[in-house]
Length: 567
Image (cartoon, rainbow, N blue to C red; front, side, top):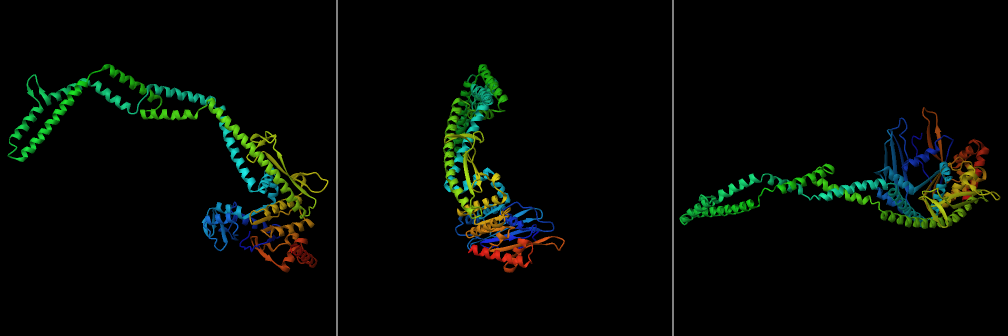
């Protein structure tokens, strides 16, 4: 493990070398950890793993600057400090510009700041989907807008097709549910219950059921107020009137009597009014067995609704409202199907049109891409090699949907209706073949590097990392790879983990990872090598003999030749 190390990386090409198993790839793993990669818990015996990185952020890197500032970083001095720690329990923490931040922010910054390539990337490059993505990336921003528009229409087409299929395949179930809802609504409509009607019916029923008792009570009260004309017996109004008149007779002697007289007069008026109301009540009150039967029938009908649909009237009314809404959702009429079929046809035509634009754009970009990559291969000791990006229609039935693109019916996915394949013709007289068939390991390494150089010329992250991507390469090809990386490092910061001395000779800064096995635990360290020490490291890489005078002389010659080619 690396217990503690600081990597002083150069702004140009930094090469990292060391014996097999010394821990070179751990440097790349540290960068991955710093930019939000998956982290395992800290090593046994360590409290935590900590990685920190200081980055100079260019003024032109607007998106990177904006995202860092959003996360709380202060970029006034142009520097961005990132940190990531992982505890022995596996808990992870991240900091951006000295402020705590979600680990996901590191990943977002990493996509804008750094591009890491390893041998696994070469394997991915053999996959058609990766080759299509590489061509789309090369095609530029306008092509990306067409691709985004196509994907939006494609997803809308998929949703429309799914809804149409759902309507067709579920028509029977939905029709059955709709019939049940209509039967319920028809039954409720036939009864036509009104809000608050249940309480009104109950009140009217009680009144009719107790009509005679109510009549007796009202008549008794009315007689007590008005008196009995048959017997001449006065009522309460007569008594109160007599009392008021008695007080009014002597009210001039004491104002209080006048006040009492006034109050009694008001009481008499209220009694007279009550007598009139009671008389009207008695006129309206009647035992109506027919009306009472109608109320009983109405209540019975409403109780039937309660038993089927809800426990009370508000619940029944709510059920009816929801059922009406659901019926609208279960509209399986021919009109709805026809509407969706028309929409599906329009979306299909639009998707086919955009897929056609994508195909034309890809074919135009393929010519430029092929020419650029082939030109770079000539400088990587493959002077006669040609890379062709073939854009062909995907066979019908091999996508989510078939589209009539141009004059061909093609299987379409969210990436279009095309199949993109990179073909390599390594030398004249050979036939172009797919990369996974026609490229050796060394050729594949150089093809990937040529593609990366082409992408670097059109933009991309400012930091490029290559982890042993020169596998299977040697001799003059290795020198050309070193020269190519040095050229790439003029506009990018390039970090390379390599076993090839021909590549390491082109480094602007050379780091060596070495391990110490003298203790109980093997510990690796990183150091910068210059001059004689660098020549000894290259001699070790050349022949495994760092102390050989001939090996060191050969290494010095290699360094001198690399310096001449760089200049």
